[in-house]
Length: 609
Ligand code: G6P
Image (tube, rainbow, N blue to C red; front, side, top):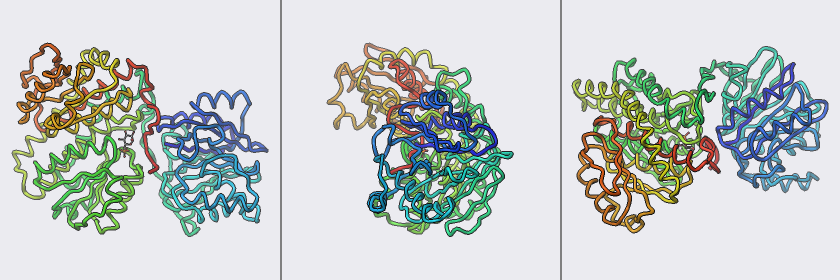
């Protein structure tokens, strides 16, 4: 969603800010802007892409040693230039904000009564005026910021500059990520390390309630009570290569093709731990996982579908009941607490607000056994969890999640194996068999990728359709859900997924020759049932697109197209079958000419409710 970058240096920071904003584009946004302090506060804002804002900044000759930039994903107020950040108060204070201020209406009334005029419909503008208000009462910029944030309800990451204090920028964090980047004689702030990785890798993650003063020489951090605080310096290992497109046309395409490597890297963690071992999840895992009697999974979007696959594994392999909830539902539900329940959050970004709030809610009910499965080190959700497994997918830039999903599946499979082992439900022979399956997984995924030319041919037929149905059964039903989600996210074709057995309870009414039906049909115990479901569709004139492995013995016939997925890969089959549905969505989107990496209205990290 929104992105922040700020810099103070002895050189022109405008190119750094623009470069940082471009690196944040992947998060999803609809307008961009920057403000610099150059004797005056100068600002440029544009709806649309960062490149348009960059052209305007160049045309107006922006150059300065202090500045802040922002990409905005509209929440309060439409996508207009006047709602874009930075927001300015009285030509002096400029501010960028991620998050939502819940008491903005009360603050607006109060500030209006003090004589402040508002130019935008945003919740953010009140913060700029509030800081200006305290500044005009004699506070310096840092003190004014610290006073202002005490009066805000809601979530924020803020970076602020003041024309009267050109030697510093100040920042604050509550509920939204913000970090300080440490350079040589220059320092930075950013909402995401990828924004500044080309200038520094040394970063300090601000904690909840922190404020910071950033000058050329250094950084001072204060905790929520305003006391000086020491925060650890981390060296980020985000690779520049993962942030560059290389020879690919889209990040999504690149990330789909990176999956054999990402999966192999994630499996390496399991191999290094000597198999399914609590050590995979952190130092305290043995004690925490030993007496787990139920598992509750919480996540959103694609991560939620990873959870749905995991439920089959956890129940079948470990014999432990497992519930999976959408985080935004769980957090508002009256939940029966169980201290022996393991609460697992799954989040690529580690900062999805609903998942974070669901975790906080579970903790408030007394759940101390919390595990985060996450792809972004040091992000908020793992930091709030007792245990963590970091997937090794590398930075994922495409809004539609691909390699994060399949590596989450590997992590969840390892969790099922570990819980089974701790309960004595897994023999050495079974463990060896599962580890062998894991070892073969990157190869099977590569075979699935090799199906791309056949899938391109299918995708071209899909591109002309407005609706599609995805069917699966058992552990492949969540893969049908994921296929439908991918297709609608990036190609804007309306797609729904059903467990194939549910077909005749409703969706069959939609089937006609204009409704392509995709079926995930590997050779598992439900294959014969799926074959019957396919007949039900064929009898109504529906066109079938079947992904079936070589052992399924599916023949092509009139209206039934078959792509053969790799030979039966057993328990890890959902991971392999995720690949063709990703490719189908990607190529359908390509054929329709949509913006694959930045689908309309969507954001990579959803940091609002
Ligand atoms: C957004 C993204 C999805 C992602 C979901 C959950 O909707 O577009 O790709 O699956 O958020 O994100 P998380 O980072 O928590 O996995």
